Image (cartoon, rainbow, N blue to C red):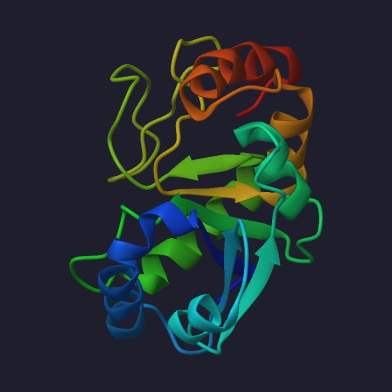
Length: 183
């Protein structure tokens, strides 16, 4: 498996779904894959809920959503992240060989990210049997859905976006995608 960090953004307000999220992750994510959690605080009770094999990045809860994610993603030392939120837990095991082939495709064809779910943009050329190119100029180039993305590009997206909440970020980040030519 390529240098991918399986990353979840969460908040302690969402702790009620953590048992499901971590349980499903434990069942369906490769044991050899590095995992990380971006969370707003740690204490003894919270620490007990987070599995030991997760690298923990704590963000300042007083920051905006974009600043929170940025403060964590800037610390990541992996080439790629598989980024999602705690309410996007797995129902079955992904085809990890296929995901690895997606990263190889990204590298060979100079792509910055691959969204792992159909959402937003429905146009675009078919690249492979199951990959569709999202046009560079679109209203939905980057969305907050399970995505494999180059870490340096994710840093750039969050750094250059307005300092805002999650919903406004998803709108504003399209501007940044177009400015940097996210592919």
